[in-house]
Amino acid sequence: MTRSKTFYLIVFSLILAVYYIFIATYLNQLGYTNHEQLFYIEKGKIITQGLGNKLRVMGLTSPLLPFYGSYIFSFINPVLAPVLASAVGTAILFYIMATSLVKRNKDNFYLYLLAALFILHPGLIYTAASGKSVYMILIFFFLFFLNMLRFYNSNTTYHVSIASIFFVLLVFSDYKCIWLALFFIPLVLSISLHSLNLSEKESVFRLHLSFNNPSLRRKLINKTFSIYSIIFILPVASIAIYKVLNLTHADDLNYFLESPYATWNIIAEKFEYSAAQTAARFAIPELSILVSLKAIVFCPMIVLAIYLFKQNTYQILTLLTPFGLIEFLKVKYDGVNLVYQYYLLFLILAMLCIIFRARFIKNQQMLKAALTIIVAVQLYIGYVFLTKSYIPEESNFASVLLNRTSNKVDEQNREIADYINTLRDTDHILVDDAVAYSVACYVKNIKTLTMPYQESYLSAVEAPEKYDGYVLIANEANPMLGYTQLTDFYLDGIRRKNRNLNIYKIYVTDYWTLYKIL
Image (cartoon, rainbow, N blue to C red; front, side, top):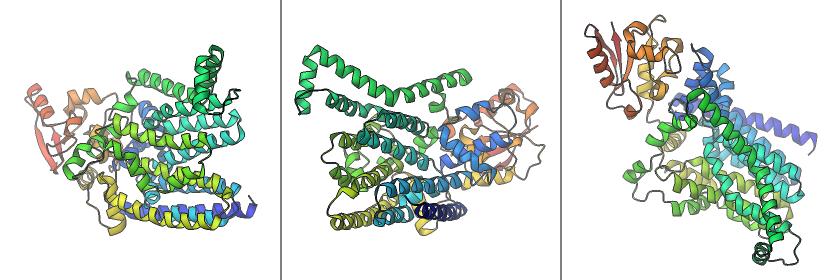
């Protein structure tokens, strides 16, 4: 890769980042938000401006890497930090893919094709402008599979070790990707089987010979375990250490997965990604048996990618592992719809295959014509998938992007936060940010809020009149009512404890009521 081409790629990536930032900030002004974005804003404000012991928030907020990726930009603008992170991160993803491409293929057609996808594909625009962690998942997913394909070409374990590191980073960007390890077992077995010195060429017969010969069976098991360990022992060890960290600081091994204080997924999967809501709104809900077919419809390029590796067993098995992942996720998390990011994995994987194999195809004109048609189809299907998504935050993004209209899903939170901002800095409000993080992220002075991460929180809950002058209560209309103790029942309880308390309604919205306690 020449210096001039590297320079042009850097310049184009910077322009792409500016393009994404413009879209992201514009959509943010129109009112687009999502759970993950608001969660990162609130946790970032706690670390930067909050009072009390913030160690648990700093170390156990999940997913960890996307949170810190967002937090870096909070020094520029706390409210826009997540969208700035996703915009810059998606531009970095383009640069990584583009540099990998130009190292292997001097034909600029494929570079232009990649650029067109990053400029026009709605999924990649969603990745860049939504403020979600999709960009980081796609980066580490690409680098993991890139190094696996390098290993097949070079047969050096260095690339496997690097792939293992990127798999750790992938898991800390999206914990559900840990299940990808299950579907590498047949691949690793195939690699080990073909490394045995046998005259038989067919895999089935090689496997039969190996299992019926004690010496060969022992070699096969040792090789399989060795390769599998190199790839996955580091991710498993990292997760084990992180769980011990959770046990030490939160008394729960799975605190980062199951606590609404640690992750936004608890609320989102209940109220945004729920398959029960899909069944009520759509005649044909998302079915596990159709998930792989849906992925192929979303990204028909993956079929061409698999065809390009038709004579390479390892590569084909590698390309099939994401299909196993999404099928497994649909079965294991049957009450939750698959989000858009899991379909985007196939787009990234397909482009990786084009990067590796396009230069070996003799009939370049036919390949280019096929790719042009497929990309055009994918752009259209991408918009259809986004606009018709079962998940409200995805379909709402498409509505804001295409029609410049938002359904104002966050209006209730903004309204109560605007009123809190009018109170004095000496006033203190008792808030449960398990559900009220979407309010806290809009509060200008977060020091006025007493929240569960602070040691004084439990005492404030028991006697709010001694610690806080105000309490934010979730109303019955609030869909997240069941995830907080600060409800009308809580008020009834403190009234019974202290009959002399005077409790007044100060401000009321459909979802929230702010009470003053004297």
